[in-house]
Amino acid sequence: MTGPGSTSPLYATFSRADVAFERGEGAWLIDSRGERWLDFGSGIAVNALGHAHPHLVATLKAQAEKVWHVSNAFRIPDQERLAERLVANSFADRCFFTNSGAEALECAFKTVRRYHWANGHPERFRIITMEGAFHGRTLATIAAGGQEKYLEGFGPKVDGFDQVPFNDMAAVKAAVTAETAGILVEPIQGEGGVRVIPPESLRALRQICDEHGLLLIFDEVQCGYGRTGRFFAYEWSGVTPDVMAVAKGIGGGFPLGACLATEAAAAAMKAGVHGTTYGGNPLAMAVGNAVLDVVLADGFLERVRAASLRFKQSLAGIVDRHPDLFEEVRGEGLLIGLKCKRPVAEMNAAFRGQHLLTIAAGDGVVRLLPPLIVTDEEILEAVKRIDDAAVALSASSSAALKAAAARSA
Ligand SMILES: *Cc1c(COP(=O)(O)O)cnc(C)c1O
Image (tube, rainbow, N blue to C red):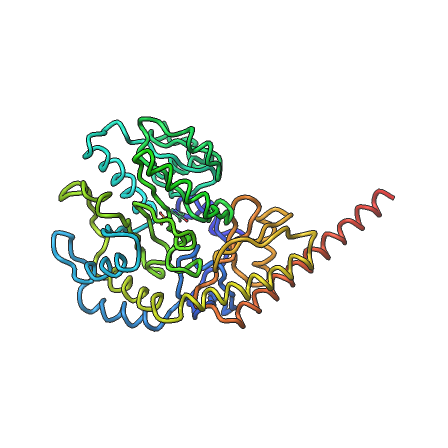
C-alpha cells in the first residue's frame, strides 16, 4: 500500500500509507471506509489526550469564537497564564512559545549562545550532542542531530555542533573546548530507538556543565509532558537543565512548542533579540492551557505509570512467547520501545495489518506511544493484536522455510 503517487502535487518527502482517517475517539481512529484503528502512535507522541478529547474540543470551539490570533506586540493573557503554570511545575523561570519542536530547539540554541555572548564569551557557541539524537529538520537542528541521511544534499552543515557517541561520558569530557557553550541531550531518545540515558549519566553531564560553565539543554519534545509518567522525564533523575525544548504533547494536536529556561540562562534574550509571528497566539494558548488542566489533574500521571506497568508486563510476555521476533521491551511510562529481530518496517506493517498503529524508530525498535488516556482494555487489545501479528509472521516465515527446504530437497 502506498499513498498518492507521482501525480500528486505534494512534495514527495513522505512515503505515506494509503489510509485516510476521518475522525477519532480517544485511542481510536476511524478511516474513510469506516474501519477502526487502535492508535498507539498518537501522531508521534502528539495526541497526548487522544482524539477529540471533550475538554480540548470545548476549549477550542469557545476560543474560536473570541479571538484566534493577535501579534506578540500585545499582551496575551492565556500565554502569561500558561507560562506561569509551566514555570510553577518545572525547573524554569522563563518561557518562549513556538509552533514546533524544531523552533523550540532553535530558541534553545540562540538562548545558550546569547548567554555566553552577554557574559563576555562570544567565542563560546558550540554545543555537544549525542549520536542517534533527533532534534528536528531545520538547518541547525539537522546539524545538531548529526545524522548523515538528514544532512545530505543541503550544503555545508551549520557550524557549532560536536557529536559524541551515545551515553559516552568520557567522550563528552574530551569534546569540551574553550568554544563549548552547552551540552544537548534527549533524556530518552525517541527517534533514536527509545534509548534511555541513565540517571547517573545525566548527573555526570550536569557536573561537567557546572565545572566548565556550560549550559545543559534537555530536548523533551518527545519524552516530556507526562509521556514517561512524570510531568518531565528529567524528574526521574533529579537533574535539572538550564534550558529545555518541549513540544509534541504540549498542544495535544494543536501545533505548539516551548523553550523553557532559568532566569540566568534567559537573561540576555531581551526585546527584539528573538521573535515569532504565530508562537503563543490565543488559539494555541487556550488549547495549551486545556491540555495542562488534564495532565496536571490529580491522579493523571499516576494513572500513566500504572498503565505503563501493565503494558510493559504484558509486552514482556509477548517477548517470551516470540523469541524469534522480539529481543526486549524498553522505555519509561508510555514511551515504549519493542526491540525487534526483524526489519522494523516489516514489523510495523505486520501491526498495521492488525489495525494497530505504531511508529518505527532507529536501533531496530518499534515505538508504542499510546495516548496518555489509554484504558487497560485498550492496552490488552493492543497486546492481543501484537501477539496476532507475531503469530502470523512466524507462521508465514516457517511456511517460507518449508517451501525453501522443499525446493532444495
Ligand atoms: C519530533 C522531535 C523534534 C522536532 O519537533 P518538530 O515539531 O517536528 O519540529 C525535536 N526533538 C525531538 C526529541 C523530537 O521527538
